[in-house]
Length: 146
Image 1 (cartoon, rainbow, N blue to C red):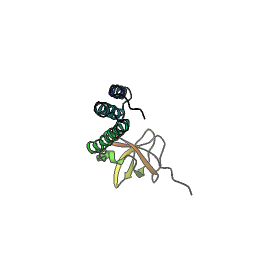
Image 2 (image 1 turned 180 degrees about the vertical axis):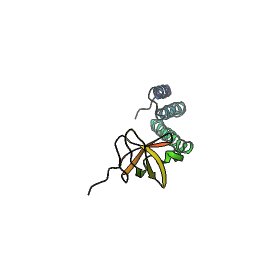
Image 3 (image 1 turned 180 degrees about the horizontal axis):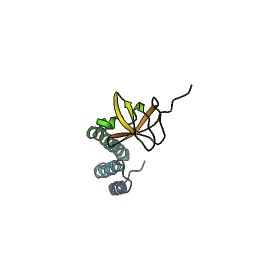
Image 4 (image 1 turned 90 degrees about the horizontal axis):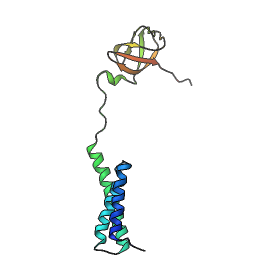
């Protein structure tokens, strides 16, 4: 097996680091850092197996640490609060809804003004599409037929 010269390792590392700027994703940079570190070690240790092993080790360590740190500093999206929590909920029409006129629905035990693009009779089941100010936008709930 032929080892690379230290300068070649460092050039490969710099090219990979430059590639990270073109293809973002915070993955290629770790291979670039590993290549530069391997190039520095290659000045002292000429064994090609050691060089390739060091490159694999530093690359894996960099990717692992980036993933681990990324999970530590990112947080999951907060649960929606207030009226926003109603998006996707199902309810029942209490007062007829017509496209030009709002009606009333009951969803999660609360009564809300609602509008829809299609007429909906009292008693119809609806799904909340979104919250628009102080009223809900709903659509008819498609029930599965078995």
